[in-house]
Image (cartoon, rainbow over all chains, first blue to last red; front, side, top):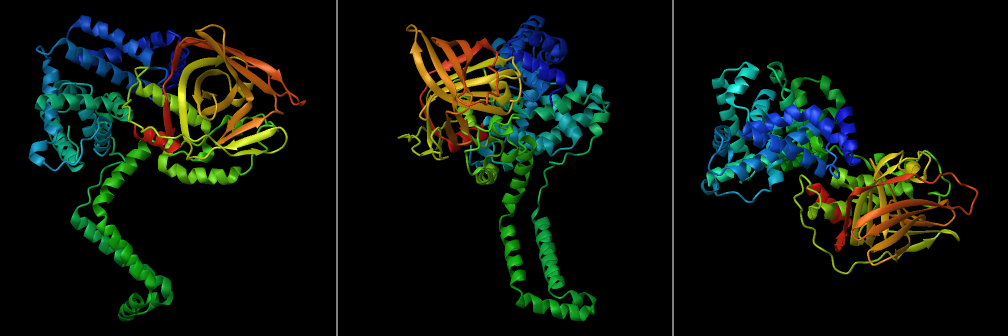
Length: 191
Length: 387
């Protein structure tokens, strides 16, 4: 799902042409900066991680040839910000991150309580299972879940963006987490 | 404890499907939320639903059997219909086998739900590619070269084999030694994390003992030979090289074989077939084998030469001394590739259909490793299917 422009950018990176990075910066800077800023409150950290994102792109393409450059950059930005966040603050955690973590813990099947899990699923299997689960949801549920837990947008931001009440979003997310919990249990997945 | 699990879970979300992430990113307003549910929706089959479905299926099978056996009965009275139906049930073996089939389905119902979901997801992520559509420079080159493949028999039967086995591995089916060579290096690069690859879980492939060299050599005439490589052959590599080049001459040999100019990925392996160089441009491959070398200019500098007289077609290693011959020289300095040249060695026949390639070497993206590995083709397919 790359645009022609994205394909050209990837080709430039394969040729080790640094203008590929400049074009990524021009096209996607706002995107990856917004993802970094969700987790990192310090402006200097964000700036530093912007460079880390570009470096990770430079180092990983080639040999990787992403089929979807924007999603690829989002993932890198998210990983970079999480790593930076973990490195920076074991004590000072951003409120948004903590809230998201607390909410997400509801999705995780409790091994001791269930006692019937027959395998420890690998990370990739789990993410594929979650992707499958989300594909089975309606668009609204899916988008809200990903916006909230991948892009770390707050309920207030989602409410403003989509014109839905905060309460309704919270309820919807709560139900989705509960469904995901059941789904993962059924699939025998625990973390 | 719970929080650290949540953190892990949070990390796992980083691997969510690209399309889902893009969809969410592009959904900027309320309209985007109103889309219909996706086709891959998970359907939960409850026991009551399953029973009703099976009952309905049985009735449908019986009805179909009645109609097929005695089409005229459709027009008889209701009472007679019932009578005929009962007779047919006791007489027709088809109807009972239909029932048996449905009872088998009933017993496997819990799996059915899971499979439905899995299938939809696999199709979503990895649409299967028939082997017939796989493009190889040898078979798809616009320039027909009478010396290229005409001596290789049995293309049709091997294509049939490919398509049936392809079902097992989808996109990851390795249908040629070219692909095998390329992906063997890719796997080692991933496992050793030479590049900061994403999604590299590094699944293990158990090394195999006692590698077997290909033994079957068949001379087709005085100057054309081929080795047929079995899919069961254990492939051994002891050295892996990866780098990229740029082809500049559209009439060059490689450009013709690979369907155009531009960036080409190159891997070289020392393996139990022979030292082999594989060029990959998009989905097209071309491989040829060692001509001579390595020759050492100093302790650190060495040159390896590959010749297009010995090349790969599917699972065949072909030696054809009649065709237009080119040599590729790869110059190493320690663990770097520092030079790459193409040389026209001419032809013994009058068919000089190609020009020599104009090649630019990208020197800053090179990996050279000496790692011993043994694996079968099936193991390699399994690795890429599961990682």
